[in-house]
Amino acid sequence: MSDDRCPTVHPKLGIRCERKARDCWGIDHIGTRESGMAQLWRNPDGDGSTPMHDYFRAWMEAMEKVTEGNENDR
Image (cartoon, rainbow, N blue to C red; front, top):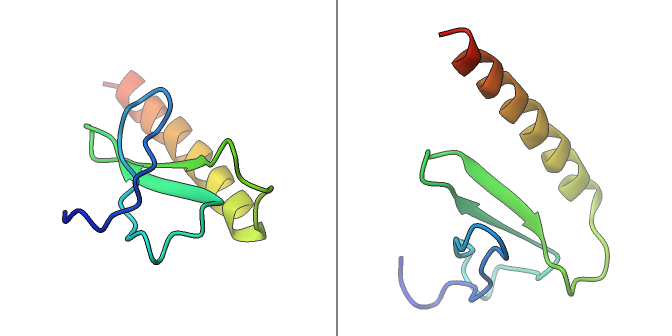
């Protein structure tokens, strides 16, 4: 990706936000883990969240549980 990306980095995973700086609202950020799964995180300095943020957070938590369940079945 080019240098016009949002400069925010996930505080624990160290992955950088993939949105372009002009498109990132600063409320939440999205990046990709090494496993290829998307990681959505709230900006710790942000002013709350949007309903879409809450929806995608719940969706990602559910997807992680499904993935963990599939890996445990192997």
